[in-house]
Length: 263
Image (cartoon, rainbow, N blue to C red; front, side, top):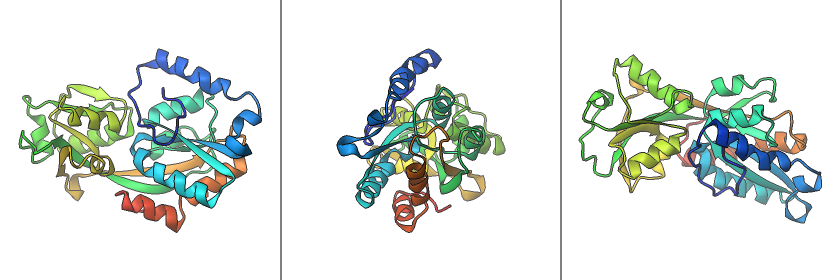
């Protein structure tokens, strides 16, 4: 399970429950004192657990927020939403949470404040550069000769993918099921898969290394991104201020420019 790292960190694949438990130990140790919760210069340090698909845009969001709030430093830990939920349940020290679906957030209602949807997203088929296997639609993913990678069903993008495939009666036997949308994208970029289903925004970050095949609106799914404070936060007021800021015009413009749809 990923640790809170500098905001430009890219989500890595988790390696199972045992490693997740080990990975949490440094996070829990970080709860020692009030001084340890502060960043350089005595700034309040906020730790935000965020869905992997927000990795690139939140780097910019964090910079913009810190410029407007010079007394606050924001750190992000990016992973699949299901991994973030596990961190919360296991007591990892953090201040706010942003997931890629409302279901995961709803499962943590006793651990969070009232969530607010800050953005929405859609799915797209990612293929190798130049689309060498000539994928044209969801139906093509059923080809047994095609190496398709999907996110695991407990991952929001995996759940959305299953929903759209089932609705079109398309049966796909994936070569692997990944722990996050970024892991799916990586498999396609590296040529380890011919195609995969990812979010539009993630595909945009690799536009020179992959091609995309649009999924028609009538066949697509809408991903909603709720944000909420964590009840365990030691900086409740500052965490709430950050969550509210994500709905401001400035933050919304940054999300929109990254390809996210407005709430």
